[in-house]
Image 1 (cartoon, one colour):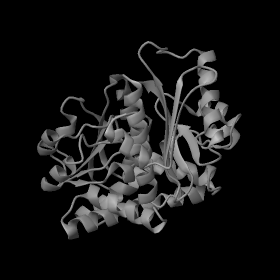
Image 2 (cartoon, rainbow, N blue to C red; image 1 turned 120 degrees about the horizontal axis):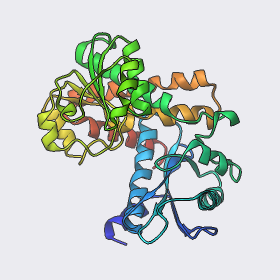
Image 3 (tube, rainbow, N blue to C red; image 1 turned 180 degrees about the vertical axis):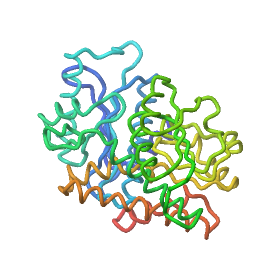
Image 4 (cartoon, helix red, strand yellow; image 1 turned 90 degrees about the horizontal axis):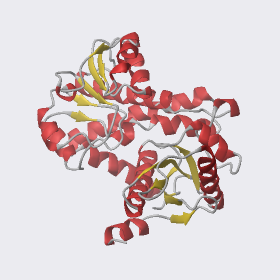
Length: 354
């Protein structure tokens, strides 16, 4: 284990790495913090080059979930699970292997006795969560047929819209998106839901995706389709990254022609230093872990905090108020929005004793 990985491990409350009893596949669960509530985070079932890469990713993502929840006052902590598909092992999961893997994961989750609640992420689904729920109650994001909320699409998109409203008020004096020009890059489920909401709010939306077959859906939603190549540097008011993370480099930040970046993509910045590049360029960046927190907020509101869907939806307004505070304080203190968002999360954790 590298020194950095050891340091990251010691920053966590619990870390479990085990070979699954049924499948022999590695199951990794990292619980970063439960100071503000049970740790919540999805499970990634995907390819990694090595166990070390998977382990480091698990630690990084669990810490990120802590900061996401703390920044918006979600009443949960942060955790993550990773089941890496490694070279030399199975790269595709047949039905039997997948079911065994899910039971291996459920077994470890259950042994943590509620410290960690698993949910869908890359390579896992609401149907998988339903299977896990047969073994342990510590699971979210399961099917609506079982009184769960299923996919987090609605909450994520609604939360991004709230972050955009706060950004609009900061830049133009009114929390109103009517007439604003928005480019949505990434037209998956969240990008589509966000586009529909923006069009309904009166925004002028252009959209794109790596999958050109999404063009018809984009146009049906009320957006004008543009080519992916060059989409990030189109002249616009709000750029909404809703696809892959790590896109924004120092070079791209210097080439942007927008007033704000507000989207659902995770880990949007290639490095933390890019936050300063965006600030230097006069671009208001809503930190991704705040802007996209609506999915976990909406889901845990109903499934963990036992609120009604309406009450859970109302909780998403905290994303707007938190984004507004981040933008205001960053301007007043001449610092980056990333630094401000991190301080808000750290203040909440410190108040709870961590």
